[in-house]
Length: 431
Image (cartoon, rainbow, N blue to C red; front, side, top):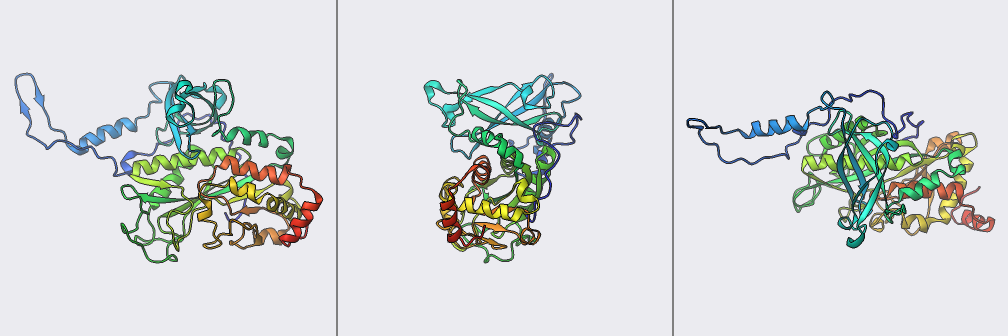
């Protein structure tokens, strides 16, 4: 992101009073919905029965009409899509339930449960996992008053299950020191689109390679930009849903895209990224394309996929904030290994020191240097206040983990003076 502006006044935990939110994403946008029919035959008739052959378009249109039906004029009931993170820590699961009336806050929603043995999150003999609604967004697929519900998962006894990273993040973001610093996050989510049957990047010749990197970044044209309709549909769907999406662009590797979410405050950043990922999964599902968050989907001279995280605190944004930023960088250098271990699986294939990355084994920082672990913008240096960009997180990182760890290390962590002095000398940082 070029800069961090003030966060949106919209709070993801509540919904506007209006009951009509416009039209949901129409499935007719996609060509992946194909209903195979028997060969058309002539209509046959007898005394009481008439058989009429329906065209494929007629069948699809009838299904479209039902999928896009606005039920708001006919019932107060709504559909809530409960969304949670599965056993891999990256896969997203969801299921639907009817709620008796529209809601404005997740506290109005009931808890629910699911079979954790089918998601790798509980044993078969004690498989019930409980979903706690935490954030709600408007549903861009169903429209009307229907909602998407971001949940986290607990045992029946109320203990967070191991893949529930939101619980710990919420604890950190509710700490008074953290609350007082009003941490802002702007997250740059990169992703790769793959052809469904061959798992090869969209727009690439099957089993082959396009021309070298260079022409594809932020490009236009059928030979340079692959998947723009998906990116644009996702952009609009996120805005509709109430996600604080702030931009999107084509990336350096063809078939790879990025969108930015933020600035978001505290736990909101994780909720918005996870909901935006879910919406992207649904759109690629409709388009018949596979979404990949692999940090290095193609080996060789191709850029990987990251999730650069822009971060600031109140003290960093005020006069004299650059000194606070440098102190934060010092703390980050002392906990480099802890951060790397939590920044995404397979990140060692991406953080090689090439393709705009730093080496995974070495902490570094610099002004306007995209080959560093932590980048500080020219404007921040010039103004003496602003934000930092952590370029280490992989595209498959857990935003709850990354945002909470940044806040913990820069606000709550207190290294010894001796450790600070040695670290400052090592990374050539005057604090």
